Amino acid sequence: MTNRTVDLAVDADAALVPVMRNVAADLAIRLDLQLDTIADLRLAVDEACGLLLSRAATPTTLRTRFVVGDGTITARVEVVSREGTGLPDEGFHWHVLTALVRSARCFHTRGPADEPLTVIELTVCDH
View 1 (cartoon, one colour):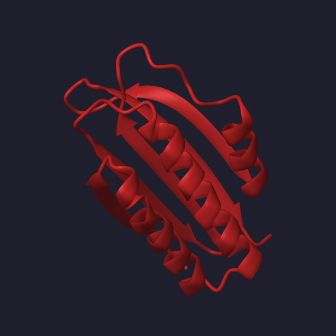
View 2 (tube, one colour):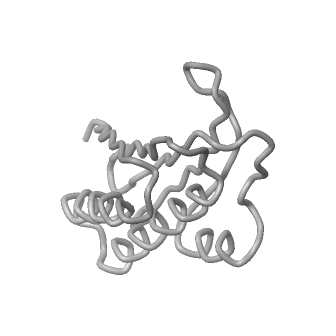
């Protein structure tokens, strides 16, 4: 199977995080991942969105790119963050996130308009 990409953007608002969660679950279901993996992906996307929303500049957009391959889904969640915002790579919520996925990383980068982005990438698979 060739990798497929799904891009999703919503206002950076906690009320819209279920949209991201549900798209993640739908993609995992279509890939026929195990039920535990589907549940883990949903929770991990929820945690990633929550970690980023607490660092988001306002107003801004929460973006997620899902890359779906053979038995694997990678989600890249990003938000324009406030200047000087630290990475969410420690603490209880990060620990929960990393326990749910095969791999997770977070980093800062710059967006197309040179705005500061905070990014979390996570991958789940049935292997």
